[in-house]
Structure formats: C-alpha cells, structure tokens
Amino acid sequence: MASSPINAAATSSPIDATDFGQFAKLRAGAKGNDANTIREVARQFESLFTQMLLKASHSEDSASNDLLGGSGSDTYRDLYDQQMAGHLSSGKGLGLADLLTRQLLGKAAPDAADASIIQKLQRASQTPAAIDDAPPLKSAERPTSADAFVDAITPHAEKAAKELGIPARVLVAQAALETGWGQKQIKNADGSDSHNLFGIKASRSWEGSTTSTLTHEYEAGEKRVERADFRSYASVGEAFDDYVSFVKDNPRYAAALRNGGDGVQYAQGLQKAGYATDPAYAAKIAKIAYGQTMNASLNDVAGRSL
Image (cartoon, rainbow, N blue to C red):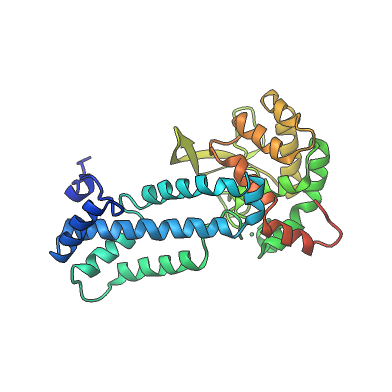
C-alpha cells in the first residue's frame, strides 16, 4: 500500500494560543492569509468546541460527579477534557477545522461534504456525547426510551442481582452501557437481536449460538476496532441467567463478588479482573447506575427501588 502524503502543517509543532509570543505570530499569520496558520486557528477552535461538548456531557449528571469524587475531581476532569479534546481534534478530527479552513481561505459556499459536517456538529451540540442516553429487545417489541428499556429488563435484573448480591440498578446500568440503552444491541446474521446485553464473547467452550460483529477494544490506552464472536441468546431472561453463571463460575471474578453489596466495588472488581478493556468501564457503569436518567426511569417504574 502506498503511503499517504503527510501535511507539513500537521507535522509542525502546534501553536499555543495562550502564549502571548506565539499568539502574536498566530495573529500575524492569519492576517497574512497563511494557509498553515489558518489551519492551526481552525484546529484550535475545533479543540475548544470539542472540549465544550465534553464538559456539557459531564454537567448533565451532578449525581455521578459526587459519586466519582465530588467537586474536587472537577479540576482533574477539566484537564482530562483538555487532553481528550486535543486528541479528538488532531488528524481529521470532527471535520470542523477543515470546514473553517476552507471558509477562511475564501471558499464561496459550503458543498455537500460541508453540509454533512454542519449537520453532524448541530446534532452534537444539541445532544452532548454523554454515555447516559437512549433503547430493543425483540425487534417486534423494541423499547423506544430509557424508561421502556429499564422497565423491560428490571425483573430479570432483580433476580440476577439477588444471586450476585449487588443492587439491581448496577446490572441495568451495565446492560445500558453495553447496548446504548438497547439501541445498539448486537445483531444476529439475520438482523434479529442477540439479546447479548452484557457483551459476553463466545469462547471455544461456548456451545450455544453465536454472532459475529465489529467491536471496540482498548490496547495500551488506544481504542481500536476488531471483529469478534459473541454469544447469542433466545431471550433476555436467558441472557441474564448466562451472565450470572459467567460471573459466578469464573474464578477471576471471585474478588468482584466479595463486594459487601457495594455495586460500585463490584463494577471495579469486574474491570480489574479484565471483564472489559475499556479503562473507564467501572466509572461508566457507576455514572449510569446513579445518574439522572436511571433515577428518572426508576421513578417511572412503579413500586421499584433498585
């Protein structure tokens, strides 16, 4: 494969707009209509925009902020957001920097590609990228809200939680995380739902049905895409039953089960044992389990307190 050309501007050291000396250079270059400088200005604007979206997603859920460290964690979260925003806006980024660069260099009107970028940015600004939002089980009876998702799986979660000795809301949260509140459930080859609510892969010892799909994994902190085989179930109840067996029968999760009824410790135990490669897996489960969306959904499920 031929190597892709490298943009000279992308290989140069980025300009720090908070440094007044470099800011003067940035301003002079922009006035001179220098393409590399304009590209850098656009990239920094995209980074700020991305950071704003990340911050908006955090601010929606104050309950999870308290759970994950209180207001003192805000500084560390802001620093993390700055680093993440810079990473996300590097390379191709969201496409906003390219759009701004073309506009600032005098391109007349947005084309179809620009219009697509604008639509994506509008959707992103209207719905911040929170983990916590959205929901199917069987195709014919697919839930259309977080309330419906919680209502549909709560009886199974309560039964499984008793066997595992943890709050049922933690299992609901884990299922919500793995499936995007049911909206991104793993499909079988024929398009039907696999009911794999917990992202359990099909090992060689698995004798049941399987389905293959692309999945995100983390390696050395880097997110990548790979294809993997997953277990497929005939029903939601079967999925929960297998999840309980999967956790209880596997010695690696013994420490997670010694949680004293603490759902957060259980999630942390799963992560430490390698249940998922996402380094923030336990924190995401906790955020959803004790977040506003979950609390609101549980309030709508009459007579249930998970």
